[in-house]
Structures are given as C-alpha cells and as structure tokens.
Image (cartoon, rainbow, N blue to C red; front, side, top):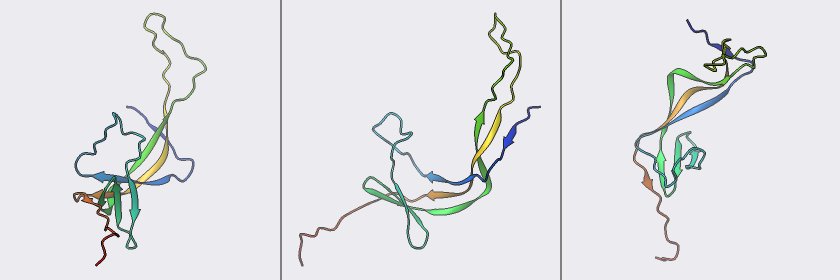
Length: 125
C-alpha cells in the first residue's frame, strides 16, 4: 500500500476551473503561458471572456467534490546508496505533497462566441 503525505501548513488559495466547449486554436505551437483572453464579471456576477474579437458568456457553478491542487516536493536524502550496475537508488524516499490551492467552483462557457462589432461614429443620422 502506498502512503501519500499531504502537508497543509497554511490556508490554501482558492482557484476556479474554466471549462470551454470546443477547441482553442492558436498559431503558436504551445499555448501554455500565453495570454488567451480577458475574464470579466458584469454587475450581476456573470462571467464573460473576451478572446480576440469574440466574447463568450458563461456562468459560475459549484463543484460536487472540490479539487486540491498539489505540488510534489521530493525530500533530500543524505545517505543514498546507488547500485553501480543498474544506477538505481536502493533507499526509497517518500514524496511530500503541499496543497497549493482548492478548487470549489468552475466557470462554464457553453455558448458559441459572439463577434464584437463596434458602431461607426462617422455615420450621422
């Protein structure tokens, strides 16, 4: 049986999960770390996401079971024996996980994006 130690030293942050329907495409190879869009909330608390020249409207939903975001910390071993032939550690170390954040709600964007159209100020009635 594997034991997993979870360390909770302070009050974790509260994050939200964002769920998009469909595919998010980019000209870049990897979109990790790129600016995708701007998330805003209206006066009623409803979320809307602006991606390029499109806007998506969504809603905030509570999760049935919250998620914990964990960060793995490997302990430093001072007395580690290494097998010269297989290069394997003979002494096993126990990883410790720290709770970084809790996710209790998600923001769902189910509708198709609407184009943002600006009114022309030059046309006078």
